[in-house]
Image 1 (tube, rainbow, N blue to C red):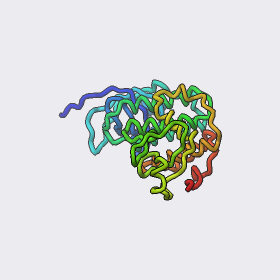
Image 2: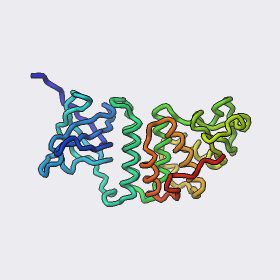
Image 3: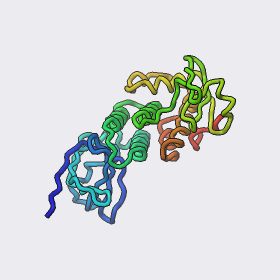
Image 4: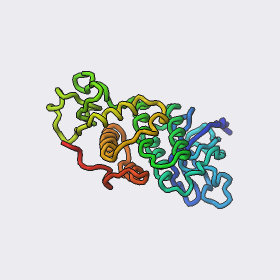
Length: 271
């Protein structure tokens, strides 16, 4: 009989999907094992031991057998360390947490070891649970930090084409396809639907958010609706170009945390 060691780790459930009439597959984000999936047999039965101990966004202590068959590990047990009680019954926070977890799940390869992503996700969900709405700034900051951890940050301080430094207080064209901002000299060469104009204040905010590893300094920044729309629009195009994301999930989450956007997430990019 083969022996498979038991691993113990903190973990955040990112996705819960049915596996059979009574079982579920749970996708977890962990600091040491990356993204993993476990089968929880009998999860839908009334007397299941793990009932109420895990849900999307919880911080849990997970025990599982370190052996994957068809990409699935066998679940041993788990206990909720933080069930984000303040978010229970709050549909705005719930939508935001669902989006954060969906984005982390979609952006992380199976087994990828990115401890910083676990801590970023846990920190963002903790902030959601502890601070009053709206939380749209937090979601956009999370997206920028996630892109940075994956090595996909948009270039916002230098022109993507000629590498010229973009002086503070100036605007730029933004190209998701090229990976960031374009200077005035390179802009005429890229007048197409894939680029949009970033006003000086929008580009400045993106640069500031990109530099900030903590959300605390950004929390009190006042942003008018037009600037919010431009910020969201630029990141939406960039995420769609560089990550396999779910734009519908993002649009719903941003609307639910009081971002004043068109149902399609944003208007057609400016020409």
